[in-house]
Amino acid sequence: MEHYTQLRTWEQDGYTIQVAYAPESCHPGDCFDDTAYNIMDICDKINRGVYDWFILRVTVLALDAVLATEHVGGMLYERMEEVFEDGVVDDMVYAATVAARERASVLKAQLERIIATETV
Image 1 (cartoon, rainbow, N blue to C red):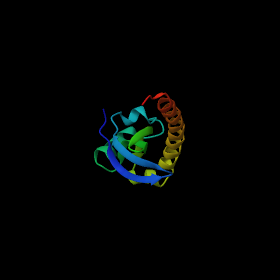
Image 2 (image 1 turned 60 degrees about the vertical axis):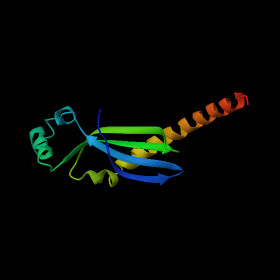
Image 3 (image 1 turned 30 degrees about the horizontal axis):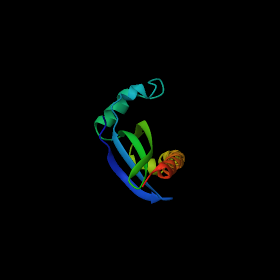
């Protein structure tokens, strides 16, 4: 199980958005084709701290309840913060908030049924 470290947290459209990362455990050779990339060079730069190699997670919460999570592994950047600049986080937040809205709708319907059947 990966240990995630928070990068950023903010409020958006009534949700709390959390972006976190964990070290990537898979080998870069499993994600990149050695005919197009020099895997040995990539591994060397990861080991020397030139590149960040990680898993990215976006979590959408409401009232501290997790409604949706998106994960992407094999993230390779010179600076981890670049994920906020190139649209990766934006895409993940969009997908997670769509899933969160769907989940919230289902939860709302279930809670309404529970409340309607409660006896006092």
